[in-house]
Image (cartoon, rainbow, N blue to C red):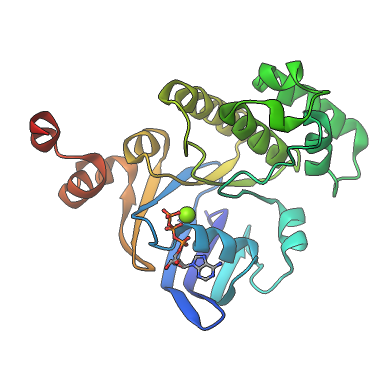
Length: 245
Ligand SMILES: Nc1ncnc2c1ncn2[C@@H]1O[C@H](COP(=O)(O)OP(=O)(O)OP(=O)(O)O)[C@@H](O)[C@H]1O
Ligand SMILES: [Mg+2]
C-alpha cells in the first residue's frame, strides 16, 4: 500500500544556508511516525519543507499518491496536512472558539465543522471551559491542546506536530499523548511527530527516524529503535549512566 506521505531525496535551504540533504521518510496511512534528533538537526525544517513555509526545497513530497512539493502552503493544508508549529501558533488575544474557527476557515461544510468543534470539546474539556475567553489566559498545556484541536479542525489526514511536549509538566504531556493516541485510532489519522522526549515518542509511534545534521541516519520500527544501542545512548539515556548520574 502506498504511504500517506512519502518524502524522497529532499533538500531544503534557508536562503543560502543548506539544512536538509537527501532526506527520505514515509508516514503510513493511519500510522504514527516520530522524528528524533538533537537540537539543530533539521526536524523543524523538515516539517516546514513539507508544509512549504520559509524554506526552499528540491526533491519529491508525495501526499496520498500526489506530488505536493512546490504547491503553496494553503493548498497543502487544504489537501489534508495540518501543521502544529513549534511555539504552537495560536492567537492569545482571540478566544478559544475563535481560534478553533480559524482552524476550519478553509472548510465549507459548516455543519460538519460545528460537529467537529463539539468533538474537540469532548477530547479537551478544558477548552470548553475557556471557549469564550482569550486563549492567552490558559496554561501552556491547555494552549498546546488548543493548537492541536485547531489543527484537527481542518479535518486533516496527516497531523504534523513540532515538539508538543516542550515546556510542559510530565503529567500534562502524558495526557496530551493519550489523547493523540485516541484520535489517531478513532480517525485513522496519520501523525508525524517531532519530539525531544524520545522514550515517550517511541512508545506512541509505530516507526521512527533519527536525524543528524540534516540527514536521516537511523530508521526503523519504534521497537527497533528502542533496542538500538546508538539510540539508547544518545536519546534514551543509558540505564547505568542514569543511575550513577
Ligand atoms: N529561519 C531560519 N533561518 C535560517 N536558518 C535557520 C532558520 N531556522 C532554522 N535554521 C537553521 O537550520 C538548522 C536546523 O534547524 P531546525 O530548527 O530545523 O532544527 P531542529 O532539529 O528543529 O532543532 P530543535 O531541536 O532545536 O528544534 C539550524 O542550523 C538552524 O540554525
Ligand atoms: Mg525544532
